[in-house]
Amino acid sequence: MSIHPIMSTVGYEGRAQHDVLRLLVDDEVSRLVDVRIRAQSRKPGFSKTSLAAGLAEVGIEYEHLRDLGTPLDIRARFRAKETEEAREEYRAYLRGDLAARLALETLAQRVAQEHVAILCFEHDHRVCHRAVIAEELAASHGVVARHLGAPQVT
Image 1 (cartoon, rainbow, N blue to C red):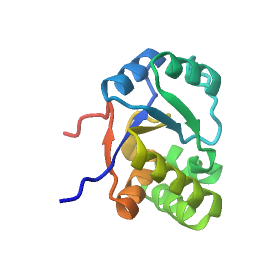
Image 2: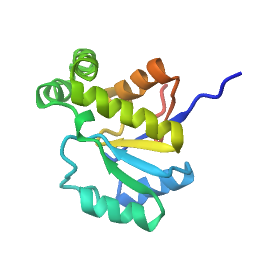
Image 3: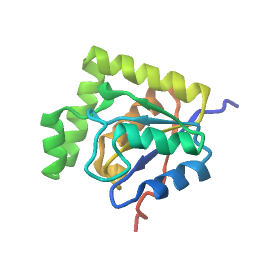
Image 4: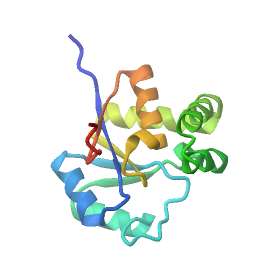
């Protein structure tokens, strides 16, 4: 019986920094990997410097893998609620862009070594590119994803 590595995902939409930190601490995350192209936010506590500082206070490492961010044209599809098309375009991007493939492999290595969570904006992972990242890691490395604070499916 093999043990599959576990990775968590989290979105900060509708949450304060302390709420996200609590989810990460409760899940015993040791590293947060930011998968936004630009690690900045108008929401207090979620730009790179302030997020890294908050994480450091609770003993969690911060890493930004910008090449796993959603290219602007694909992000526009997600925003237009063209979720399935956006997911497939993002999947093609992950598979076809050398920098994205290398970043995905870096993430897989981190997940194999420690408990990692990936972060993006959207509350619901089903309408976010981070779900595609999780699916790709599941297919290529057997990673099991937990979506922290995910909406309940009814």
